[in-house]
Image (spheres, rainbow, N blue to C red):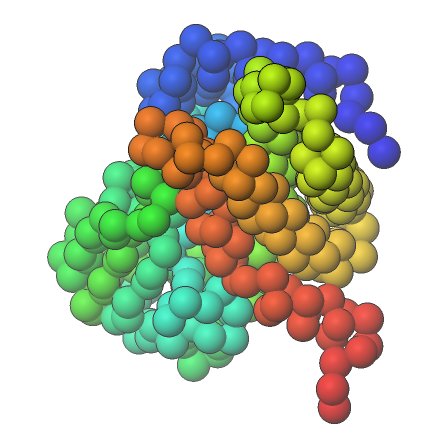
Length: 357
């Protein structure tokens, strides 16, 4: 399983843009010059019509730079949620601006620290003229404070459903949350009888969110691999340059062993992430278990390699000026995003029929 030549060209283009435009400034050139926001959007809605393989490449490169652009929340969560809903009117109305990057989307989903669709407790009651009134609190909403399109999962009498809620509507309170990883913008969204429009069929939210969760874990695994590989690259370069007792520290056997172990972790994680990506691209029925396995493996690999980066850098690795702490924070934040590794191992066990009765 290897990326295609076209995907490697995409990688080079994304890396070049990120090199020229650090931080949030990268979003506009990424969307206008490369069209990253619309890669996985069908052509009929203004996108490029590609799929999970291209998303994987972009996420790896964003992870490599710890880029704060709103790609994960908008292109990986909001866009697939709309597509999975099957609501052609909503897709035709919302996707063109999301695909161009002119508007950022957010999916308000998690509650009480859980991304399990069954944990949704926000309620939606039917209102006048086909509208709905939604009440509940959503946490960890990626880019939720600045998004122009807000999709909310709430429970009706038919089950979990998906709603479009005006970001400026009455009863909608959005506030940015302070996170350990400052490069991942998150928000808390409090809804108090906020007016919403049903997206897709009532009661279909469980199916939509389960599919989005698989895609989210697959994409996040790619990001984690990109970041872990960058940690290893930085540490290898330091081990060649840092001299102790008259020789580079990378020449000491103990350091070689630790670097070799880190390399194995990165490449094993890469295989898991690619496996999930290929399953997502081909609509493989095994996607759920591959995505759960990739999220678990890549979370733990990234955390371990980021920890080794700090240890092998010594004192400089714990200073504010060095990038090591930024990767360490992203590693532990992303490990919990969309559910911790233990939860995904339980999902994997259930998919394999190994869960306790």
